[in-house]
Structure formats: C-alpha cells, structure tokens
Length: 256
Image (cartoon, rainbow, N blue to C red; front, side, top):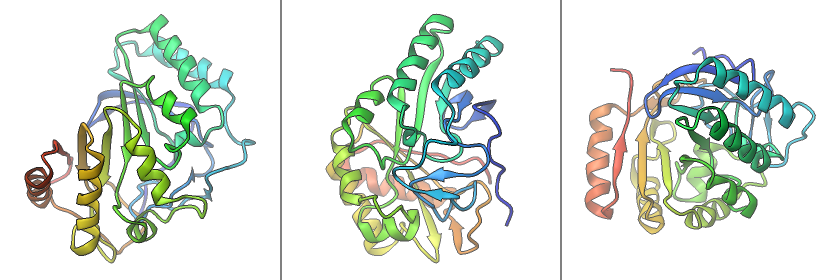
C-alpha cells in the first residue's frame, strides 16, 4: 500500500485538519527521510528512516531558517487557525526545540496574535523538564498514548531502544491540562481488545487528562496487517471508556 510523501520544506500547507481547522505545518525534521523515536505500524509516512531518541543534528534546520520560514508563512497566510509543529517525525527531537518554540511564540505574537500554536508529539521526550516547560507555550499540545503497557508499545509503536514506556507515562503525569491522542488499531497487533485495551484504559484513568482524542488509520499505511477501527466501533469504545473513567473522549474520523 502506498504511503503519503514526506513534507519537502520547513513550513507546509495550509491544510484542513480534522482537529484544528486551517493549519500551517511546521517541520523541524529532515526533508529526505523520516526521523522519529517511533516506527509506528500505522504511520502514514511509512517506515522510520532514522529511529533514535538522540539523533544527529546535521540534517535538521537551524533556528534562523525556521523563523524565516514561519514568518514568510504567516505573512502569506495570516488567517490560519493554527501553526502546528508536526512534520516528518517527532518534532521535539530537535535539540533546539524549546528555543525554537519560544521564538515562534514571540513571532506569532508580533505578526498574527490570533493564530494558535499546536504540537503533535509522541511523548517520548515528555519526561525531560525542558520539553515540558516548552509545552506551556502551545495552545494545544497533543501527546500520544497508544499503549498502556510496554509490550503494546513495542508491538504498535516500535520505539527506539532508549525509549521507556515508564518515562512516557511519568512524563505525561507531570503535564497540566493534558491532551492525549490515541490511535486505535486492530488486526495483527491491536490495542482495542483484551489485555492491551484494559491496560490503555487503566493508564488513561490514572493520568486523568483534560481530553482524550481517539481516532484510527484514515490514511494509507505501509503495514498490511493493520486494520482500521470503524467509526461505530470508535463511538462504542468512547462510550465505554467515558463510563468507566469519567473522562472526556473525543472521537475523530474523516473517511467513511
């Protein structure tokens, strides 16, 4: 199955997002390969080219390059709803991520104060204090939790060796007003059935996030063993988790 092409620049879009409206993407990662601390079986960008929690900085954009690109993007599209840090992998892996986030925040305030800042992160660096401090700069920092236990993390997210499920979980516990995003899949590996599902529900209950965003694979994926969870099943799961935990579960999908 074909996957989506990588982003070719620092700023891309605007794109119509199911969660954020009209969004201008910010890519702090290489343009020639995917750089991530995960290699998720459902990733719409395909396999991870470089999988590490501590990647080399040689192919990453400099802070000045990012700011020039963001400024140009905001001047062209001042009416977008969000600037969204995402791109070709995990944005918080950039060693200057906290500095870049602060500089973009100031630039946004100066040029387009009505534009909000969002972050899509897999939460593998959220145990680091400098990353958690940077999260406060974002209006919508959305942090991944697909797995409630190390075994499911290994099967679905296929993390770099340095990644620890416990570090992710403890880091998430320290984030105020936490927004969790969870991708639910079925098939060869699953987090919607059995012990994996129960562990995920229990982890959410302990975290007590302000919101949980639940969705499935609406885009092509490279692993043929991944099965999409249909909308009516997502709704049923959301109702079950809300009843058991009292949490707000927001289900999303874009395809029939």
